[in-house]
Image (cartoon, rainbow, N blue to C red):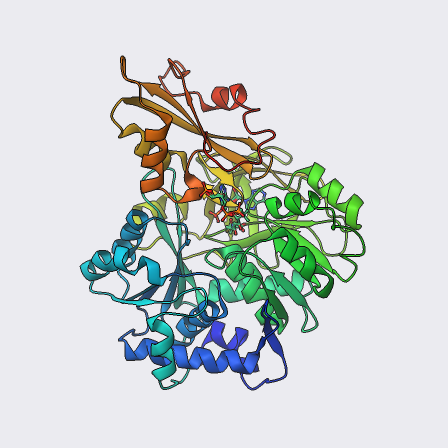
Length: 511
Ligand code: MCA
Ligand code: AMP
């Protein structure tokens, strides 16, 4: 037996010393063969610290070639890789550690002390890995003996990615080798990836977009990646002339458009730009085409399913649509709350079925049952419409979700933090249009009679409890929150009332 995902990404090119996998910003590069060697060392280090096949490895580490080797080493060793956003606070991390019950945790050297108690509580080993490779993990890897590839089949778990829910805490979406492998194959084919490609990689690698849609697809094709530690507009512009493909969230494209160097010459070698994780405004699509001659290819995906639909590589890329289902992926629109299809042309709940669909939420059978039907259809929470040519339009979300710069923020989680403060009677957290992030998080607060909570108190509480992208960008005090006859806060009315709040917002400082 072989290891389905590891072999497809790296194993089949393990002897290829001439094929570049990563081009690093400082000019160095790492070949497929070198990365395979590093993954074998990582797998050896995992064994040496006691990680067995099926064990979870939690990683809250900066983007680096060592972080990619860690992912690949986990696949090779049959461990379940659990990457986490570097912005999560120690209190958020404590929850993930308790839930995932890993046998190994990797974090930045500076975070070690803050995670020690949580690591002890689940009896996990704690190692450190910094952005430049510093920390105890590099020593462990250097001292390890490479180990053979652990056999893994399509149904074996490869990764958990945590995704928040409308109610309750985050859920670990269990993704198998088969899920990730099938999605990589479908995207290589849809986006025509080949060994000749150079992907400009500026996304974080703790989410499905940067890790699976980007790294897995590039590696499946044997392509190279121009490896950027983060999205920096000027660094990206400087790298574009050597790239053939770029993947981004809409904020990347609006930021590039705001930069003078973006033009036809800078993008002359590009084959395709893709966008996803949040809606790309038709205006952005048009402005980008006018400046560069490239029609951005928009696609739609989710943590639980990987990529679902894509605009065509050849054929019309329609602004405001997310295209058609990928090869092997089935999609239907249902009357919300039922499995009954809506009549053609009408809005319905988007449901997805296929080899890309996850197997459920880790240790949360009720949540799994609520979203994943026994026959394999996954209820996305997004509302869509299919046009006469089969293009999917996402017209809304049934779930109460804000997407800010491509990151998901669940209002309930923020409201719980604010409502717990003394002097706050209640809060309503909404997303309103933001000129940089697409949607910006706004909190409307009703104080207890006679109490005067300050914005500074609210900001301090948010900083202690919530990752930076979840914190409200502004706080507004109101005497009352609008309610419907059932007593439910009318968020649509609030969104309308405050629609212009961040229309020209470039600042990040919370007001
Ligand atoms: C950073 N900040 C943010 C965000 N990111 N605020 C709101 N929304 C954000 N997304 C805040 C920080 O709190 C900080 O505030 C300040 O911005 C500056 O931080 P910095 O690190 O400099 O961030 P940035 O350069 O502004 O980052 C914006 C970004 C980044 C480049 C758009 O957020 C990003 O790379 N997003 C990509 C997200 C992504 O990969 N999503 C894929 C999810 P302060 O100074 O107050 O601390 S996977 C998915 O959705 C599915 C599967 C799919 O379809 O792809
Ligand atoms: P996540 O749970 O982080 O995987 O986020 C998935 C959600 O992002 C989806 O359910 C959609 O609401 C949203 N999303 C992803 N791609 C797009 C897109 N191209 N247009 C609109 N929404 C999108």
